[in-house]
Length: 79
Image 1: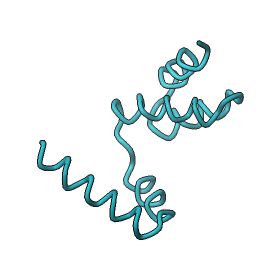
Image 2: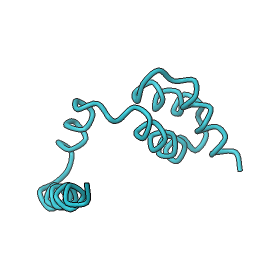
Image 3: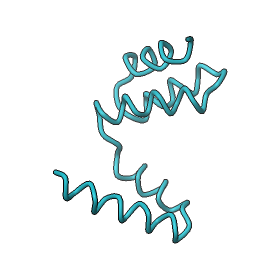
Image 4: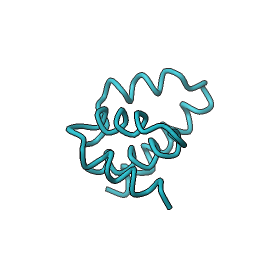
């Protein structure tokens, strides 16, 4: 009951995607869930900067990278 309102506030007080995530983490508590919810809202509003996408992608092993690439192909067919 507390996490969703906090996530919305973290987003509303942000200037961009990274700022939203930093706001969420700074609130403490269940910060991983809070940042995930905030990030979802921020992605819809701001998009995710390429440098953040690339850094996150670099942490994945090859099977997970393959899943991401197949997902991108699937989504592109729907657009």
